[in-house]
Structure formats: C-alpha cells, structure tokens
Length: 429
Ligand SMILES: *[C@@H]1O[C@H](CO)[C@@H](O)[C@H](O)[C@H]1NC(C)=O
Ligand SMILES: *[C@@H]1O[C@H](CO)[C@@H](O)[C@H](O)[C@H]1NC(C)=O
Image 1 (cartoon, rainbow, N blue to C red):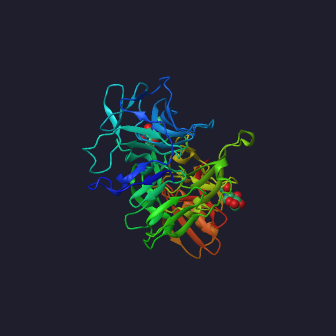
Image 2: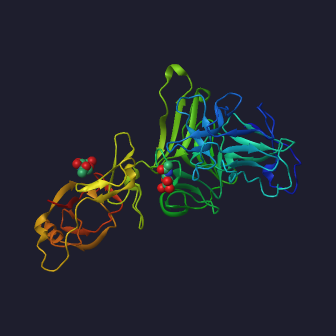
C-alpha cells in the first residue's frame, strides 16, 4: 500500500481525510497547472511513467480527460472524468485551490472533482499521478481530498477497491466509452452482482445476471496486487473469491479488471517486458457464457433486438442477424437488427402469405418474446400456423410437440446447444 495513515486528522471530516501520501515519491503538480486538449503539452505522468493523466482523443475526434497505461502502445484507458460528455479540442483541465476543473473552449464547466464531503473550506495544494494509476488531489498536509480510485468508470487496478454504493459501468461499445448497458454493483446493503442497466438510464439497474453475494454481507470488493479479485466482509475476510488468480511475478505484469461493453467482467494481464510483447491477455472472466446468462423481462438481452447471441471460440459473444434481417449499425454488432422486408399484410382476404416462407435455424431461441404456446402439435402444424398468422415473425418448435409463436422485436436471442429447439424465421421470398 502506498498510502499511510496518520492521526489525528481533520476531526470533522470523513476518515479518508486521514490518508496522507508518504511511502512513495511522486511528481507534485502545483496549483495553476493546466493541460489543453489537442495541445502538444505532455500529460501528467507518474514517477515510473507507467500511468499518465491528460486528454486522449477518441474515435469521434473529441477528447476524454483520462488516465491510461502510458508505456504500452495501446494506451489503454483506465478511468475517465467525462465519458458521457466528450469535449472538443481546446478544452482545458486546471488545478485550482478549490478543485480540479474541466472547461470547454467557451469556458463552460464540464466536470469538477467533488472533494470529500465537508472539505469545502479546505484548499487544495497539489495533485499527483501515482504509480498505482491513482490520481490524487491533496491539501497542504498531503491529505488526500479526492482520488480517481474512489470514482471508477469501468476498470479496477491492483490495490483499488470498490466500496458499498459504488459500481463499475461498462462502456457502450468497443469504441464508444459512454456509460453503457451493464453494471458491476456493490449495493449499500452489501449485495454484489452483475446487472443489466435500463439504458440509456445507466444508473438504474434492470436485471441481475450473476450474483456473488445475495446475503448482503459484502463490505468491499478488493483487487489486490497478486491479481485476485474478491469480496471482503466487514473484517476484511474473503467472502467470495471472484477471480482467485495468483500471479507469481506481479512486478513483471500490468493488470486490470474491467467490465466490458459486452457485459463480461474480465481480468487482463500484460507482460511488461518488450521481448514478450503480446498485448493484453485474459486471465479470468465471468460469466462463463454471457449469451445464456442474461435474460431480461424488458430490454433486448445481451445483443440488440432481433439478433441472437453466439459465444465465439474466443469466449466473446457475437451478435448475429437472422436471415431477412440487417444490422441497425454496421459498426456496432450489439445494436440489433431490423426486418429487411415489407411486413405481411393482416388485411382480410390478403393472399400475400404466398410470398412468405421460412428459414430454419438450429438451436436458436428468443425466450420471452412469445405470444402463443401450443403443446402436443406436429412440426408442420406449427409452421403452417405461423405462416398464416400475420403477427407471427418466428415459430419455435421443440421435439415433443411444443410450438411457440414469437413477435418482433425479438429479445434475449441466443444460439447454444442447450437451446435444443428449431427456429423458423419468417422471410419474404
Ligand atoms: C456513444 O453512445 C452514446 C449512447 O448511445 C451516444 O449518445 C453517443 O452519441 C455515442 N458517441 C459516439 C461518438 O458515437
Ligand atoms: C447453433 O449452435 C449449434 C451448436 O453450437 C449449431 O449446431 C447450430 O448450427 C447453430 N445454429 C446457428 C444458426 O448458428
């Protein structure tokens, strides 16, 4: 641990006020220091240069105020202040006595570090990018008044913890860092779980898809230096081993735990030695099969509406449009699919059912999208009944005689051997 405790501190403030930087050296960033987005000014780096704090340009051409791994070509982002409000070139971050403040080129304030409750009368004295990847704001006595480790985005770094009431929120997509559709949440009542969110209301939780502690004894999620991620009880004891990884040569590796845009929590490692350059590799992940883990009563599931999820050989989910459907956003396979043909007429006497037929998909299903269910019927009856029903987009048949009619938009789509059903997808011929 790099922070040590000295007592007494500011009695009226939270105990965190008592943390004082001591055990390690750091480059002090002084009051009035600033960085401009798009400028050639170098970011604020940690003494080892492992981490940097500053502006990073993203796909859209705008900038995130971020912390990243600074010595690897990927420049992987570990934290961001303004993920939901990227700023244009010319925006500014400045350290003042009252806070660290991000403004856009017109001078409008976009973000500021919220100092610990009760510390409004205290003035800042300096800031530092630490070798742990934690960015801290300090007063004259080097007491920490704010730290990026307390406000994680989607990533935890070794020595970082997640406290009750705190959460990771996945990015929207692989290239869009905005808050997205999944959350790793330690509630105030001590329950720890992975949730889907009510996107775009990413702060409201929809459905649990993996539970680590539903008893409510969880006090803190700890990601320790040796690479294990666990839920601790109020005595610091291990309640649940989430990733019981033990890295033997931890000094030779970079590590991070991230809730990724596809809903999977992953532990990544990266060899620091250039000769073994291979980028990030996955050490552990959960859930094992995200495609079958997520079922939402409302919402599209892991993939977007009308698509289905198939776990790839790389253990990542892939979202696939069924025949007759096309991707809404070709750059984001999780965006869902639209029906790429005119709908069947429901007008009385219409003969256009002759223009529709089925494509057959093995082991594909869209749970919870059905509006009718029949038992003990033959497969041909099931097909015919869907074909002559203008509302029916898909018929699902299970050996033994079950027949379900499904309507669009289809949700929770998956392709997995456990499905054991046949999907008849209605298309226009
Ligand atoms: C990222 O996704 C969010 C949420 O859907 C959207 O509002 C935003 O425009 C996207 N940003 C870019 C650069 O595409
Ligand atoms: C679904 O998965 C099963 C088993 O993995 C495979 O046999 C089948 O062809 C798949 N169906 C589609 C449409 O990919």
